[in-house]
Length: 219
Image (cartoon, rainbow, N blue to C red):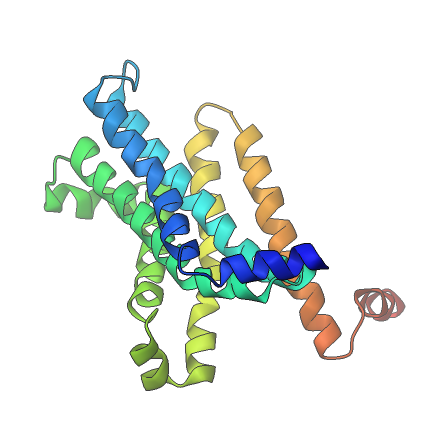
């Protein structure tokens, strides 16, 4: 119990947010350094494109882990980092989109517009970035006040749809090489985090998943 109090106190301190910000920024610092030092292998463009996408997915997992960790570990102060971490999801997703637009398409907007609907995995990924945009634009107190708490919460539940689209995008991207090991890991993590929320929802409305299953079986 004393450790929880001490950790909550540290998370509430002035240094916590800057340290989390720096930690979330380290991957892009490393990628810039690796590109400058020619450490990205034979195809640096592909490495940059895939790495930014991987980090967008990782940051999404981190964001969705905040509420379960805050509840299970009794660390309410974790909530103060969720908004910043959510913006980092958008930051890495935009870097991923920028890398595709630059390295694959040479910033030719007409070619990009034709390519997106032609390739399903790119269409799904682009849709995820589009859905992330209103979440990023409304991550500020003024937007929350303008929308109202309930509307803001309803809008930000789009993150669950985005998580599904991100996994589908990742799956289709790896399907060409029949490499699904990482996809399975991320799908399991996101499934666990979303499943926890579903269980909490059932508990909140007074239903147990086992009772729902019994009702379905009795039909």
